[in-house]
Image (cartoon, rainbow, N blue to C red; front, side, top):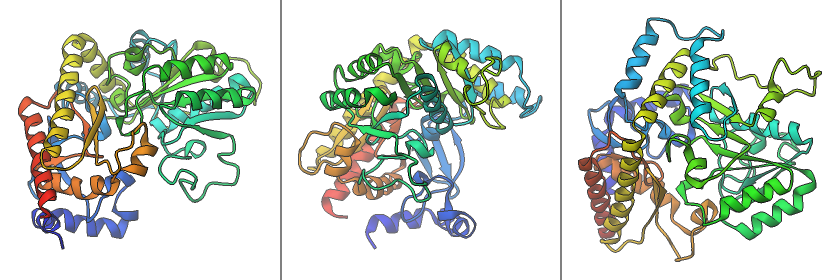
Length: 442
């Protein structure tokens, strides 16, 4: 057994025992596949600020941050204050509340293209409904998505997420499920525009994330060209801001890049750590789901939202967070930008200092690390998975970082306002120490 795995097992016996118990009662011992990594995941006992502690008492600087949802860190006081108030009221009523209205009003004021919203429970649900709205509005069947784009686990978008892109992402999909889902290559402007033109007569919409998977930045002009060509085709431009919403700027990626999507999907930061998804956009599109539209059955859009849509903790916590971000945006976003830049540049330099090739991608407070293999340009997730050592990053590099007190996902993660300058330096130092071990074969 390699030394780093022996170290990991020695540090985490409590997690090892919990994983064996979990395997007996949970498929694979987890409830979300990215939470597993070999030989077994750590199990967390508590979290605060920029740190988490496992059941064995080990402290880690957390870069996963609740799937990138904790922009202020774990247990930020503005959110915790709102949640403490909710505990005295209840958890869920399933009946409209004034807090839903107030939160929706705030979102429509802050998000540039939000004329109306619908709350749900998850990003998966939000993207599913956005696609449905696009098809209903245009009367066309085809949706274009990015190869390597992740929009949740809904059936119709569960296509071409990871290499090999031509292999179905899941068993259990009925024949024809993805028949009308076609793909484009992120950051390939010429190829993307050609695909939009080719499918234009049947094109309902294009859905993409402004920042690619593994946080690859958009090539200059790519997003603007896709938006313009989608409009020219009479199709719906859907911007998936589940990760970027309220993170890259108060106005999200659409504000940062000057985009005007017809529909926007959001999650993660939106709910301040509670289960929340959202579809927002043009009123004429959103009104297709209105129960007062008068449309006969089959002509309106069914948007259920789920039993637990607009739960009290999500409404109160999410609104408290949004109000805080709005009041402090001049402080928050420049600070996150600088922290993210220092982390990306520092981690990349620390690894390269030991003779290993590494590239850190990212935008704002988001970053990931990859280990290039043949020096080819890395424009998107397909390039990264084909031409870098993904297994090295997601297995060995991850576990070695854990041994040095850093919890990373895909070689990086999301910086929060709780991450201090000392935390950033410790992350960089840990990356350098890990690179030294790897270079020495220890």
